[in-house]
Length: 507
Image 1 (cartoon, rainbow, N blue to C red):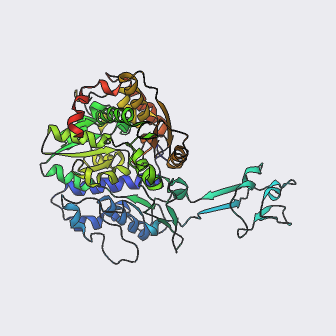
Image 2 (cartoon, helix red, strand yellow):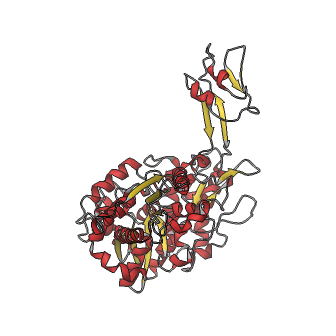
Image 3 (tube, rainbow, N blue to C red):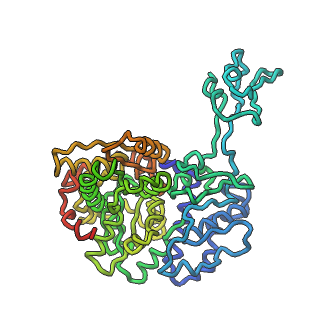
């Protein structure tokens, strides 16, 4: 639903904005203000989105807690919204699992999967649906000639839906489960969606595909603002997918000016870290494949690499050991500025999980999504499109580094580095987008189909521009990233000035 301003986006934006306002108002009582937020967002005596105003406020209350990085509570717990709210104001507060949460009393309890005859059935003479059903689960209503399905016999194969000329038979799946490439969502004893965290890789696709807004992730909006207010040197690291996310007229220069107005010390494009990552992966591929490894898989998408390690543990060593663009950029910033704190601002929910890793936590202090960032701009009444250009808005990143945000861009960047430095080496590549397709890719690699290949996996269909924290339509984002990438001063990642720093960063 990216690019479509639904009621869910409206309420999420309102929550992020209110949490940011509360963080900026250092004179307020957080315990008191947090209790008032649901009444600001859902005023009056009648519901705005659901029929029950009290239910709406309860859901908003839990969303507010998650937006402050606090743990979700279910409906059985008797406690105010402000319960343990003091934890949000501590600089050492980091995410505690789980990152992605189902707010059970907001869940509609959708069917996991069912095949359904709609009112569109015309009671046709042919009734091919009856003929193709392998379990004889479809019968005819002799009073009107229409088909109906015995749900106890139905095996949900969907053959009846495929042959219906009127498309009157539909296959319904729980949207969050259908979007989950890890089969991590099932039904609990009350019929509500439930996440198996042993399988979940925090890609966030369930979050953006739930039409009831019942799934939410934790945020660090509050902690980022308080860090800036404390006078700390907070640097923003913008993921390559940022182009167009804050409005069609928002240039990198205007976005940099907006960040500086918020109090960020400086702004870096993570595309420079993407260049470093491409250079490192290129060297690793040349050294490792095929002599030591049958193939090498890219490492920059944390949900993809975690999926690979969970489902294909015997091939975990085939995932590149190269540091991700986020980590490399953060290291570069901290190498140049010893007291720096780094906020990664990007499209991805899984980056929050990556930042929780022991090896990354010291490099990346906070993670925000583009959507969460818009709430901060709104809290300070900053219209980014109206700001004057900051002349230093562009980093020395390559075209290939900026195209990391688009599916296929990572592998292409690595390929171009190899072709430039090792022209005699023949490199073969394959890529997949969406975790279901990524699983197929690795299954075939396990079977030996991709020996000698560089494999790129992106958890989100379309690449990083389709991450759970994006707001623009995927096709528009892809076009905007490609257009911006074309303006870079260098084509290949290994041509930029920052590549000289790689050895110092990976020691």
